[in-house]
Image 1: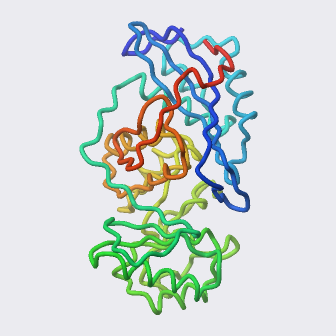
Image 2 (image 1 turned 90 degrees about the vertical axis):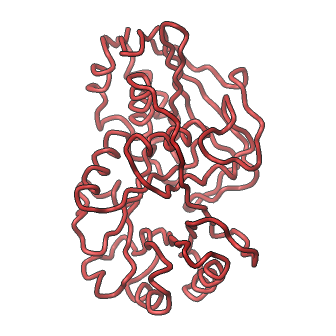
Image 3 (image 1 turned 120 degrees about the vertical axis):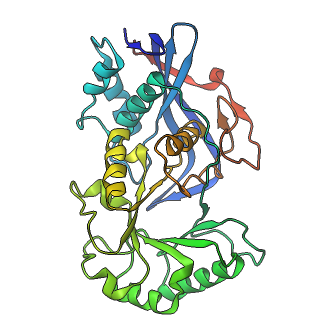
Amino acid sequence: MIAAPLGALTRLDLWHYRIPLNGPLRLGNQSIDERTGLLLEWRQVGGRIVWSEIAPLPGFSRESLQDCIGQCRAFFANAGFQSVDDLLESVSDTLAPAVRFGLESGCLQLSQSLPPPDRVRSCRLLGPEAPMHSRPVTATCVKLKVGRGDLEQDLDRIRRVLGTMEPSARLRLDANRSWSLEQVGQLCAVLDARRVEYLEEPLRPDLSYAGWTDRSEIPFAWDETLRQDPSPDLDTPGLGAVVLKPMLTGLAKTRDLVNQARARGIKSVLSAAYESNLSLEFHARLAGLWCLEGPHGLDTFGPFTMALLRPLRDLEDPVGRPVMGRDRLEHLDRLL
């Protein structure tokens, strides 16, 4: 059994959830109409319960949900862990990132209480299919998905969004690796660099960021590059932010990237991967624990029709969704 500072662990269960979405959600080259994932329920002496989530993102994670179930069962088979430290030392890169995140985030919550943050600043997300309205956008930060049409269409949407934002608000553009160097030059030539915080993954994967500052006054940010390149060069001129998805990276590796970025004066932005409210709350508290200023990319709860186990905390939920109780989860296994 695991002996944690907050009390001995008495049981660990693996659950499966399935949450309908309010419409098709486009992820890369595919769409989903429900979000599925796994929950680890950690029970301690005294009745304290900690939940952590394992939710690979279709279209972006290499591991499937079935892969994660198999890895969880294999990891705890004949386990002889004596402490949280023992467990964490056994978490290696042979495990899928989502599994590592579920184990590491559970252990972090077992080893210390994560207080609710004083104030979580989240960047409002506008997807490529989001309707463009003329009414003002009150958010201080807006992230706009671009790169799925031609450049003129993107520029039209960018101008329309900027026209609804307060002059002091900042825009983040996520191109999902779709532009050429020439397109970046054309875009930056007509945009007010003071209004755009950064361009997230603007260049196609076959292109280099060398010489970025010769083409653009707007910094760039890396997201997928951080996961696909085993040794991303954070000293690349023009890099203004790292966008970190702990579910797709693993918690320990995310912390390592945060430390590397902080040493270079580069902004770290925590970004959700359409997980449930449980992980959104965890990310919000993690930002406070790690002293990350934000705004963070946590505006991903909109497509969900239900919250898991409890209403969304620490972040605003203007819709007020119904709660899916434990009785509607599927129990898969007792791991400890």
